[in-house]
Image (tube, rainbow, N blue to C red; front, top):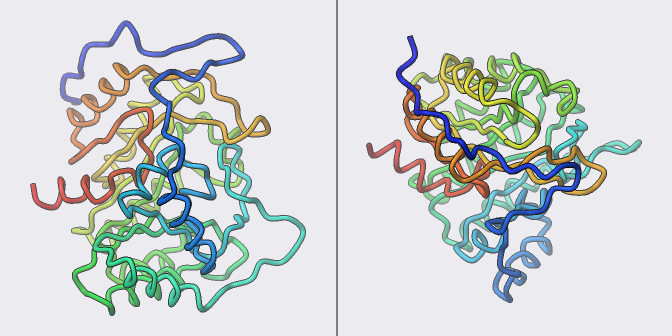
Length: 305
């Protein structure tokens, strides 16, 4: 039986018809000189961040504090998720950059980072989905300093357990895999992904290493109902997920899946309360929250509890 859930808020969403006006709480500062310089230096060395590629609204906030989510395996994805701003594959073969892990490790050393978040485009064109590049990157960062914490945000690898094991055996401190949305919306939003397969990936990670911390994320404002969000939370918990983040979806362009509604701050708080009541070890919930937002903070919250 589920624990008692918080009472429902009367102000749970902000709707305004077809053309939704961006709420005031999304106003972000214009990138300053420091942010722009850091972005340019990363690009100049061929290092990608999902912050830049996916047009994250928190880019200035994070870059100012040397908080990056590095994106490996190139900058072009082999899947066509309708919510994502990362470049999609065209009719051309994609390369594999074997030097990329070394450049990234050198940048971590240069910036003296002590918490590193690494994600990747999905590379269904590779036999291992890029798992070996993930593992090599983790290995090289730990070679610099074993105390550097490494969080990886991985694709589903089509559920291949050997690819998942390759990453887990490399010794990351946290493995995240995003469920992204509720099951009903997968066909419209993630036609080449599978809801149950994503849950299975999280379960397999725990089977390989039961004490490893895992995380997932849900985007809101895509037309989901509260009941569907709670069901997704329960599914994630049953798959061994420890940490949950929830944030507002923002369409990268007019060609992407449209925003259906803006979720109120009160409802984000309600989802946080529900998640904690259900049993997540930590829940970060708010309009600007993204999977890797305040990653080090939430990791410490769970690890040192």
